[in-house]
Image (cartoon, rainbow over all chains, first blue to last red; front, side, top):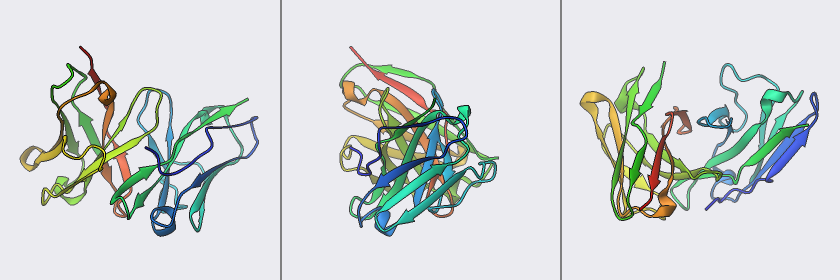
Length: 110
Length: 118
């Protein structure tokens, strides 16, 4: 069961900006770092954002993360065809003593 | 570079057990927790639990507690996940994931498909 809520889908044309929201609670997003994953079809998830807004080396600066209270968001600017993928937010949940994932958002490039 | 290589696909009957291995390389195995995450076909990610390879301490998701056991063999830098009393709803790709310094599940194995079917 997913504790973090994301929109099921998002879309945009090449070059546009797309934002994905992630809603949680005080026991997870409100008290922990948020991280974001990109999952291309048939592959393992890959870290896009960690510690709320940090990008691993190799991740383009078109991807940015932010967090406010019990919500977080991932923004993709300058959308490209290769950004078509599933995106998941995640955080540690103090009440569950475990990591929780978002419901996932499928991004389509029109 | 950090690498996690998992064992191959498994097909099991309902009620059986499955054990998946995850061999780590490119870092000191006992320095970072290993988590396990699964994903049913077309579904989202589900966190299953964590293990500290140094101490052997573990923590499991409440939903699966009692059926899941995580162990390790430090001499060969390998973590294991064993799931018992398999049900059809356990059919999924199982991933081992190493955390980073802040506890974020960061480095993922390639995944192991476990199919439960009679």
